[in-house]
Image 1 (cartoon, rainbow, N blue to C red):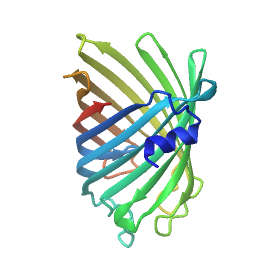
Image 2 (cartoon, rainbow, N blue to C red):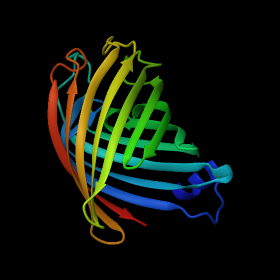
Image 3 (cartoon, rainbow, N blue to C red):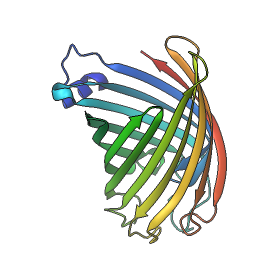
Image 4 (cartoon, helix red, strand yellow):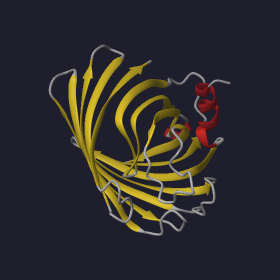
Length: 246
């Protein structure tokens, strides 16, 4: 069964329901994950599906693959925590809007291809709202299992708060400014630091060049706590994404 068919079956959508699909490919000068620079010159692609199921529940599912040049940021030279350079993510979720607040529950499976397919699974819960051109959201991620080497990080919790503002220049050119702050609550052999981890901001422009294709260049900045990732206290980076909707 294809991914779209699997998603419809999982989330209870009618076989006749409209499914929105997107394919995205991008280049990023840095691979930054939750405030930490994992590598440079990343190429990635994603395939996403979304639709509406029973009882006004929305569903989404997709896959993401990224490949990059890894950084030597391993806090323990005897461990290969950052030595992978290819990653596959599989994710899905269901959501429903109550008045002006959207609640979503989902999962993300991280697979590190260069580490013999090891990885970990997270469950997440988010709440978000939009008013005028502003958006606010908060998400909590729970790390169900960590299979990476000897890490004992099972049960780690990560949370972030985001704020966005969107604006239009023309009918086909729009922009978005966003900011976020992230926090960790964890106990592992990589870092025992809890609390504030990092904050960041970005500015993106989206140019619709056809009914189906959109180009989105962006610039971003991240600053993290010294104890969280001392080798990259702050970082500017950017990239370009091309999205094809079908």
